[in-house]
Length: 609
Image (cartoon, rainbow, N blue to C red; front, top):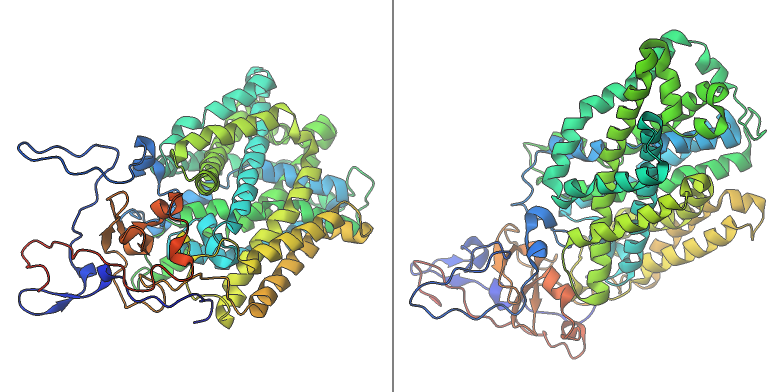
């Protein structure tokens, strides 16, 4: 099989057929699980007169076991948890792009390189982000996996994706710091709160929401959406009546750095690099899209539209916000000066003054604060997922997603106190080289490698079946990142510096399929997956099987066959096992034959018949 490798494995015995008393053949996934799922955060109740059963080999900390807060942070999101409609998931995901860093990014690009080059930069970056986001969004929604788990199976390998977890985590805390800085500026203008203290307030205010997980995030996004929509539209409506000629003047704006109003290739390349720093936003969209319900004939159209809108579709709104933010900053430039024009709160106030007068300040402050809460709960939530993935593989421990909220916010708070907002353009231009190499490599695997047969036709994310590092995606990303960063620092001349992000995208797009072809897809699967891989017998993926390690039932896609535990194990227990020595992937394969397990006890049937 393309993308396979390693010894062939027979089907594990917990998937073998058994007979019921009437002699009919029935696969075990159509029978009830021998042990129903239970909340591991509560100890099992001891029955009077019976000896207590042996405790499971592994038990998770209370917070890690509570999926109402954990949200399957390191796992496949089961169908039983995906209880939201496509529209609700899409609305929640789009609510997370309410951020105003787009305003600041768009303004900084146009101020530095002029309208014509800036406009072309923003549209070009949006096109690249949209195209790379389509396959990633569809894969996350189809397989119920977040960006890290998709990356594992899309050419990076089990430990290869650890580096991308750090890249993604850095995206979340960099943008949390940017958004927090904007919010602190608004509170300073509105109530005189010192900016340094405002940084702390913006950090602490999101913790109770993020702590409670997807359910709380969905409610916050829904409740705040009307306020955000009014606040977003109102300034442009005011200017349409009060300054109708402003758009014409804006179209001939030459920037504040002497770039001029004409097109300039250097300015276009540098501006595109800054705008492309947002490419990793698809990861935050994926953190919501993994909860999309299964695609059916009944919801097919709504499902496709919701995935497209909430996945790559965010960048259409994002590009419009960048241009709108640049326009507001241009209108306010003479009144507030360049420094304050780049801070979204000041242009917002200036735009509202003709209609709201003295109420412009509180109205603008309310809009900014609501917008920043909407995005920073997403940044903090996604950051906690990314740090969880990173540390679980490095330490073989998982105390729970919620603890990593504090780590992510501590780093973001430090960046805010260091006034990183002042170095916005340079920081984002550097970061985009790495981010685009990663995202483009994943998209290339999903679009090219899988269709060519060099990559397995599904996403395999479980440690039991993956090589530690897959050179196809991981190697492509590393080479593309290193070359583009050297170009970014001017090693290859001015044009290569300006177009360093194009170098990153082009190299990743070419190298990922090239390496997969050269290696014949050998490093995608360390061994075939007999549980739910392409060669496995058709099964109901909603069926649950009890993990031999933690004794909790999980749906079939989250299960691996483990020869060390002599039974099925869930993906997280497999990840956290520090003692197995990856025996299932070594030669001679310990699991070359069926994994032996007792036949599950099914009420009303005679085992073994």
